Image 1 (cartoon, helix red, strand yellow):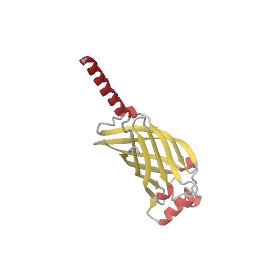
Image 2 (cartoon, one colour):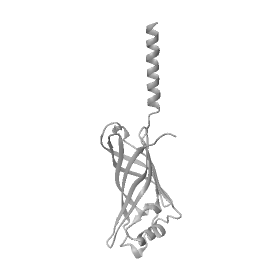
Image 3 (tube, helix red, strand yellow):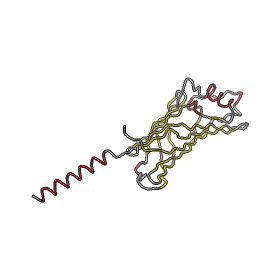
Image 4 (cartoon, one colour):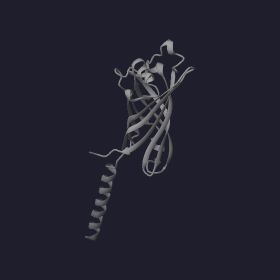
Length: 190
């Protein structure tokens, strides 16, 4: 009789453990990600900073998504912001930039151990009404259970049909450097 109770107790503990791991939190998010772009042309350097990028990361399957409101980019000069929104990205018509992808080497990231993990990310980026395959390298940082990420990559404006008028071709680079910095929080279930 004692052995039956021990078997039932062991099975109960194993089942509870299985349920706990099945419901373990694997999704993280931020609404305050930083995305910066930098354009260096012969006559001018332009930097735009967006501090309101939204991102969701699922550590179980490696899926990652970003959404960036184009009008949230800030510039040193008001005229730069006006030209960016009206002449280049047409942010009234194309309100967001979106990336949906996956961490290709997610198995190399130990989400429970502090460290810096180099990752390769690939997916689809939509910007200015165009969607293209996009890949980048980055670093996932884990410290005390907190997850953050950093990536730098280039975007060719022509790939997204963003045209540079010949009048300002010496002021705007055809390729911009993009820097992404994210500090994730655990997504709490409703």
